Image (cartoon, rainbow, N blue to C red; front, side, top):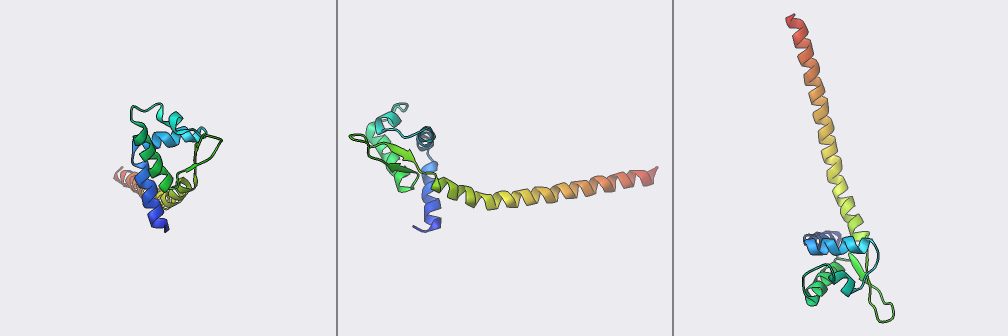
Amino acid sequence: MNQSQRLDATFAALADPTRRAILARLAAGEASVMELAEPFAISQPAISRHLQVLERAGLISRGRDAQRRPRRLEAKPLADIAGWLEDYRQFWEGSFERLDELLDEMKAAGKQHKRKQK
């Protein structure tokens, strides 16, 4: 998968609130499928489908612990998204700085205009 495809898969996986809740749970530590399914009023197959989407996106991995196959959070795709978003954050930060400068200039011009009127 290239970077664009990885970002697409990650954003698609994160688009669902159940999958985001699963990731939030896994941020606290690994968990079995049954532990992950517990807070949701959906079937075991539905949870498994959510886990498959998360796994394909690289957001979780499957371990092996005797009979258990716990899932764990994989943070790399989230770091990739943060990096991608950083460019846009910098753009908006620069735009806000330019807006602040313009407002400061307008305030200064307004003060000068008032002084001239007196």
